[in-house]
Length: 599
Image 1 (cartoon, rainbow, N blue to C red):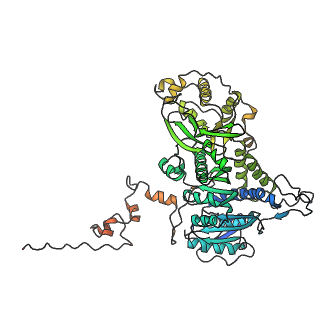
Image 2: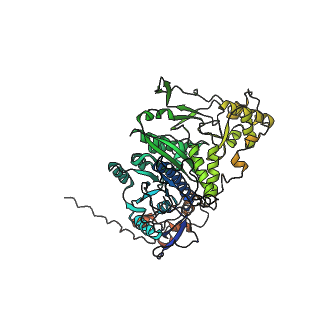
Image 3: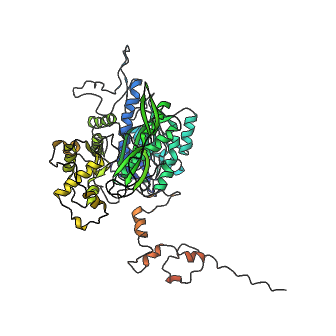
């Protein structure tokens, strides 16, 4: 699912023919593509951050994969040190093989690398992402840009020629699933597979976990956040094999649901996943995972998944692992977990629980890999337009508690007991004073991710309510607030500010949670097959708003909708009809056959 944003820069050097009528130039990164004004091929400028992050991640993955082959990945600015001498190899860079006088080969962006990575963009649309791979990511042997739309492949071919990357990028027209299955049958797996569909990637996951090479990288985007965030739990189960919950932690749970789905599908083929980076941004989620093969590791997959018990009253959540692993001599023993971790009702507010999942309960990120991506941004600045946001988000990710699934939010804890909201530093300080760890989450600005049990959280809130009293006479006796505050805290919380309560990313003023740069910064209308301009989502919403309820005008706005009775040929209102009669040919009125005379 490609997107871009218009840029004032001209066509690249050596570009092909200029844009024709009804086409415009769109620039992003080092790529400039031709794009039709009609909405025949999908693109979204919001996904620029997604593509920037993918280029950065694939570059660091190339370093890891090519190091054993004696190939050193080099970015602009990394060729030499300030003194002018060649930059010494760092941890992760290729080093000369012992006994060999030859220096390691170098791989630079835009060059074909023999023995490099083979990349598949399964749903390439305009080909923008594949072209950016070819021009910005070093260490690539070939990039296959595939799409099932003939118009998209035609446009893609022109863009490849326009950018002069025909030696690296090969356009392909095929069903993405059949292409991946065929590559598996031919024993030509891809080192990197990128899935960025319009909506759910569920139909492509099974083929992708088979077509990626051993230890290869799988990049997956989900934009169906309504389904994954709890608005349609039954649909989420049918697509991903998990029930989503509408809790404050829904965005992180969405990440864990797609990781669970990937791991469960990989397990069918004796494979398993290792997440490198999992991101919730804007209106979508994006995960980067490596896929390995190993029967023994697959046996431990059940212990990596968990169900979620979520209280509908106070929002407290508990996790129930599906399996357990215990050491047994020199090996491990696998079995079913014991539970449940909760009683029939919530111990704090006596309300019922909702059951969600299963979901991935292991860390979402590889901290060492994330640090490598951050280091590359520092050593080669100016590569990406969204670099400032990338640096801020990745810094928050490095601060997250990896072994603590899900989170609470300050506003939800406060609203549950109807009290003033403590500041982030005050609440974090109280947890640190109590001897627990706490961090932020990149998925939510007000998130509190901590290893403290729920009883400690509510004790801290009870202590806060004593300092900032709540009017108990206004609370119903059966309300969660009344039941929680009726219990005296066993922990005496201290809200004195601590220096370590303020995270490093916050102290440095990094752009962690940026505001949308413009209105309607979100999903765009689906590309319309056969051409034509589809209305934007906001135009469609405005047109249909209050269509069947209140009318704020004289009814003339209904003229944009066709008259169903006119189409059937039985509208007798003529020009006085409030619906449109234009562009439609009325059906001929039915002719009645007279009854036959009886004998």
